[in-house]
Image (cartoon, rainbow, N blue to C red; front, side, top):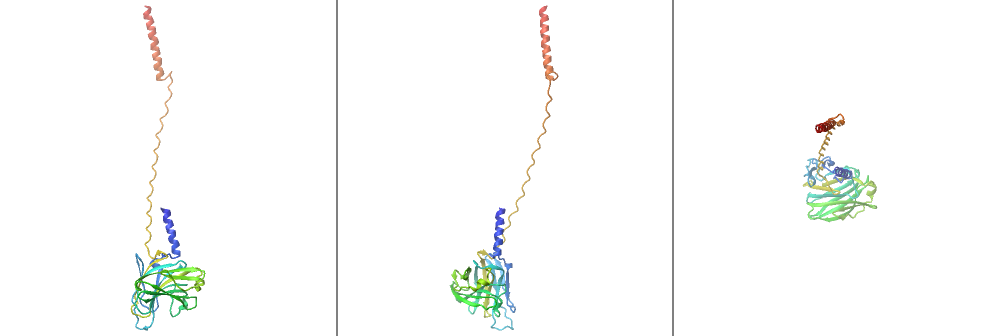
Length: 294
């Protein structure tokens, strides 16, 4: 049983090195927002996964009405891109206006700033509702020091854009990175990312965005990364083995009786008895002869 437990622990260690999140308890996620914002994303654990709540934006009086409102979370360890798979649910999102959710893979854990997009390089998987049942999966890539450029759009049908499930996957090929949403392949070939992510590792960032300040409420449920639950209970420790009972001491052997001294027929009791019997028999014979002679 101990061997099985040690193998389990080793598997968790390997998973944590490549964020198969399981790596990924709530303490590994960082929240962010622009410096002039007042509302932070809220994270909570649940049996289903990590809940990300981004409440309605609290607008400052001195801010311009046309400013953008962007919040998000970042996983504070690099993830392996080839074979990466993220499963999450959209539980609530704004309706109408210019709003989107983005799953980003960057070369550093800093959030991309729209005013200076050259501060961060990588790939943006931008998911923007087109109507009540269609999500547009837009791709954007950049290298260090360059602005992001579009790589194409994929239309994905869902039942309800404000309450749906999304699966994002990444594959690395010889000619570039390929991205998939709900099993459908994005049309772009992202060859510039091969040099940027030469070690096939990147930081994972999930962002929400809305131009209009009204109704900026999002709720996401991040369920798994690479097939492993994002939040899970620590495995119950193996019960301590009961101490083995000390072996009972073997009983000491009984002392052997001393050997009996040999008895000489001439001096022992048995010898004396035989001698006496012979003497009596001889006396009886002599007595009988004397009687017969008279």
